[in-house]
Image (cartoon, rainbow, N blue to C red; front, side, top):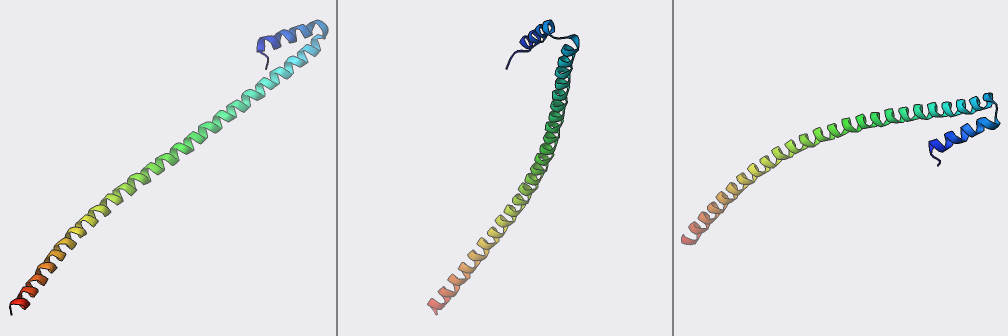
Length: 108
């Protein structure tokens, strides 16, 4: 790819062998290409900006869902701990009752 300065020098050299109309035509094509490239870059930039907005919104939604899930998990874990404590208490009571019945059976 040639630097822009070299390309401009070549166009100026063209002026020595071509008519003014031909040089203007070449410059018009260059100008039109520049405009089209600029428009495409602007459109590309807009597309990137739109994609960033979509990704940002999706990330925010996922973060919200993650916080909600975390809160639900915390409450479920607390409930599980509570029921485990109840189960331990009931198991201990059952064991004591069984030991009591066993002792009564043995000493009778």
